[in-house]
Every structure is written in structure tokens, then in C-alpha cells.
Image: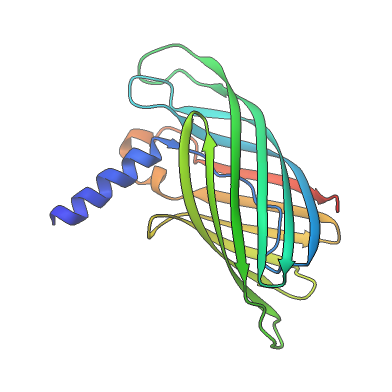
Length: 203
């Protein structure tokens, strides 16, 4: 029971500062340089009890990846935006600058089947809203070329976020939601921590 309580406390601690970073890429890796960019509406939490935790805003993201082979890709991305915080707990409403920078590798294993499935592991180390983080994500891509990608991000080994990205030619549509912020009654009056965005494959 002590272990379970510790895990729950850790999850709530991380949930107090949480956002869903958009993913406009694919699980399947193509060799060479690739660049994706997009814009999204987002709700997020930035702060602890006694501050304004809930914000809604808009963000733009650019991701650059380089596929060494069909099994490995190096990624770097940056997201910038602006959010507005509602009055919550103590303190006044204020605007907030969104910043989200991350680096990391992606490993893929394309499978030959009628579904053309591509499972992948993506690991990111980053800095967002004044906090450092490291998150592994499991991806599963469908089709070749990939038509949609489902994904799950983890806090250590605990599922934290789920998302899906649809790929229509060069256009990518992303939708994702944070799960753990919905479990705490402290955030019952806040909108879900979620992101909905549209991107484009520039290269």
C-alpha cells in the first residue's frame, strides 16, 4: 500500500504542471531530413496550489528529425505560444508564455503485414514551462504511407497521456489528452488538459 500511495503522490505532483505536446510526425521512419510544423489550441496546467494552475491558449510547434535508417531517427522540436489563466485558488488572472523544447531518439520496427503496422519507441528529454522532464512514448503507425498514428506517453512506467495523429497527404491532425489531471478533485472545475492541432509536413 505504501508503494501505491507513493506512486499516486508522484503522479499528482507531475500532474500539477502538465501539458500535452503535439506530435505531427509518424511512427514509421524515413531516411533523411524531415520537418513538421503546426499550430494548436491547448489547455494546460502551470503551477502548484496557491497559484493559477489552469490555462488555455495557442501554440506553434516545429520539429526537425533526421532518419539514419528505417529503425532510428534523431529528433529536436520547439513549441512557443501564449496562454491565459483563469482565476483559481489564490492570485489573479494572468497571461502566460508557453515554451516547450525537447530532444530525443525514436526507434521503429516496421512490420510486413496487410496492415503495414509500425510500432515505435520515442524518448524525449525537454524543458517546458520552467520544468525539466523526460518522457518515453509508445507509437503505433498504420499504413505505408502512414495514414494515422496512435500514441501513449508515460511517466516512468505509468500511462500519462494518449493521442492520435491523422495524416492526409502533407497535412497532420493531432488530438491528445492528459489522463492523470482528471483524477484529482482539485482540477474538477478546470477544462481537461488537452491539445488539438493541425500541422504540415514541410520536408
